[in-house]
Every structure is written in structure tokens, then in C-alpha cells.
Length: 247
Image (cartoon, rainbow, N blue to C red; front, side, top):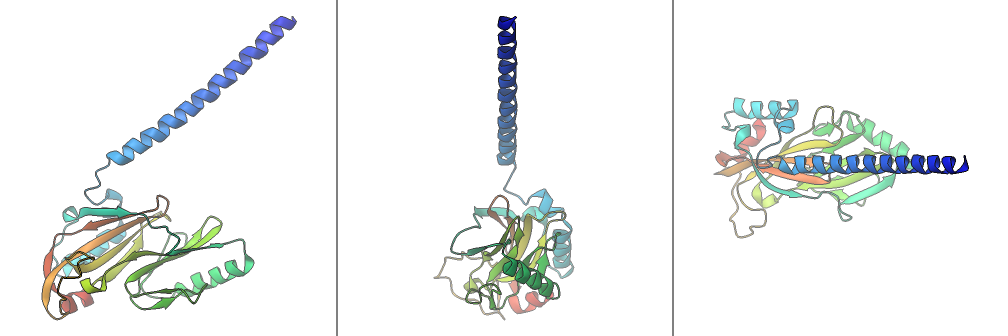
């Protein structure tokens, strides 16, 4: 009897171990499958979730109505970068009553401001005003007119970060920002700028009243995957001071 019970316990233990190993194996297979599915996605074009979103369709329809010849299929992948770094991001604890109170006040005040895009949860926003701005939590921190500011609560942390910037020499202008529908993790920023490399300091400036070659850029920011993916349209000729008010 004792030997039978020992054998039974050993059998149950082995069964439990095999089940655990099987579950872990399934998890690993699932993660691997998702990984390979992600890397197999064609990144050369705009993601369908962006192209099909209401915000993008409104943006590109407005451009077409203003005479800009542009199609979603013409956007091509440029590069992908990380967005989180210690130099351009501040992290605060949402468990701090004083910080939490200030956070709620800031979010409430920004609901009434223009060029502010809120997430579906209304606890995050993208500030794309092209003016000098200071952080309300740390006034000594500022955001230049050519920088996009993100502010919001994620889990038990309040984050404030510069997530996009552009070269002033490229006559850049951020015209729209929007979160994807039903997503508090992915948002888009659109940019008009000259068709030059941001690092090309030898390129002569272009007067805002003169015709130059421009492009539109679409920045897709994924907060979960810590990525900013940039797509660029085909170049076109335009006068900045004529096009910018139409955006």
C-alpha cells in the first residue's frame, strides 16, 4: 500500500511537471509566433491601422481638398528609433498625492487648449503647439517650438517626454497629432518639411515665400514598444507661407 501511494505521488508529480513544461512551451511558441509575425509585416509602407484610422483619413482628405497631390500608398519607410531616454524624459510617481493632484489639474486645463491631442482615456495628451513651452511639474524644463511634447499617466507613473523633433532649417511644421481609435498606446504626428536631410547643414535655406521642394512625414509613436517609426511622402513643390495656413 505504501509503495502504491509513493508511486501515485510520483506519477502526479511527473504529470504536474509535464503540464508545467507543456504550458511554458506553448507560451514560448506563442511569443515566438507573435515575434515572427511582427517582423514579417511589411514596414516599407504605412501600417494599415494608421492608414485606416479616422485621424489619418481626415488629414489626407483635407490635403487633397486643398490641392495637394498625395496618396497613402506613396509614403515610404525612413527609419525607426527609440523614444524613451533619460535625457528627454521625466518620470514621476502617481502615488505622490501632490503630483497626482497637479497632474489632474494640468489635464483639465489642457482640455480647452488648441493643438492638443488627447488619448481615448483622457489621461494622456500630445502637445504639438509650435511655441516655447515649460513643464508645469518642473518649470525649468522647456520644450522648443520644433519639439513635440508627450504628457500622461501610464500605470502608476506619470511621464513627460520630448518624443519628436525636427530641424528648423528644414522649415518644418507639425500640423496634426492624433491617437489611434481605441488605443492609449499609439499616436501619430504629421509634419511638413523641406525634402532635405536634417543633418545637412550645407543645404542653403529656403525663404518661406519662395517655392521649394517639400515632403510630408508621418511619425508613428508606439509607447508600449518604445518606438518612433517615420514615413515620408513623395516630394512636391510648394510655397510654405501659402500651404501652411491651409493645413
